[in-house]
Image 1 (cartoon, rainbow, N blue to C red):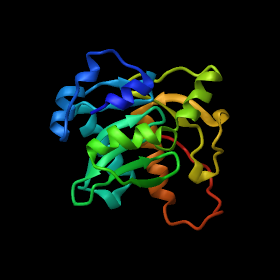
Image 2 (image 1 turned 120 degrees about the vertical axis):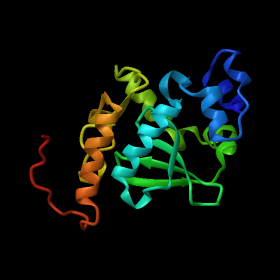
Image 3 (image 1 turned 90 degrees about the vertical axis):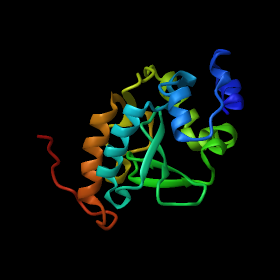
Length: 195
């Protein structure tokens, strides 16, 4: 596992020895791993638990089903559904308010999907544009998030990005998603305040 991905984005030889097929094995052998300068990170057990809580607060319809295992530079959380028997990885994208399904099991996600479809799955070209515009690589507890979420009219452009704390980003945008969910497109949203 990881061999093709690590060849593509680069890593040292010790990282290439990772071979896992379950979440506990993944956390034990690769927990905390950063790939591609922050393009993708593997959760630790602690960060996975915290991420699952954030995801379930923002997406209450997935309560009790989320098991996060990785996240990317933009704060998107990758998870397996604890109640779904299909081989599906879910991508929770709080900046858009969407959940996307990636047709792969855990091993297929790392070995095939993000290797063959790196840009589609991880937004690699957008990350490069962010870095090229002078943006910094996010630390383990940070992400490059939207200033204004796309589901509230934000633009999908580098000018709408900022380096921010991952937990704060998910908490604020999660609350916005919950409060605006179900509103018809184009509905005006009044002033938004943070207390």
